[in-house]
Image 1 (tube, rainbow, N blue to C red):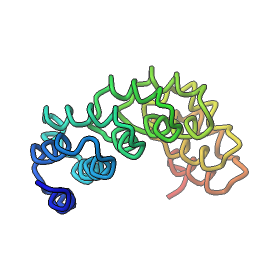
Image 2 (cartoon, helix red, strand yellow):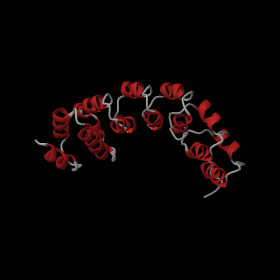
Image 3 (cartoon, helix red, strand yellow):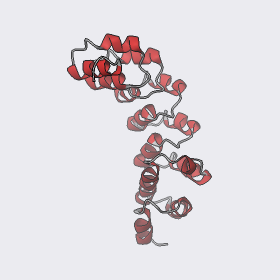
Image 4 (cartoon, rainbow, N blue to C red):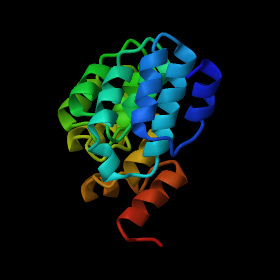
Length: 188
């Protein structure tokens, strides 16, 4: 398969994962193709398919993509719901803060990793606010964050306890207070 054929093939979401793997193996030194492989996988995984997630080929490809130099590819792996926990742990230490931030937003990232990310840069901490695995003690802190979008994500987080939501009802931002009221069943 030549470059043009690989580009054309990767534009198809229904491309079998083994063919995606073959293209990756043939062009792994080409960051453009590697990025297209990551995007193809992202499109495949945008609809949660547990069978596809169980694919050994998918997991192996996610592992390989987590080590490439292309930041966009690592970014795609960090946000992928099929990424194994050990790879999320590795990407939680990535040099690029956006990759770490996407690990923080991934609902499959365990709370032990999320707790470590809380001491990271603001963009990474902000990613924790909407993650249902974020420990309650961190949600309590984030509920008082200076950024209203962080507070809004905390108010909408399914794991935010009622006592934290109750404290958010008087938030200075009406969207935050409304979201807290809705979660508490005080408003439709």
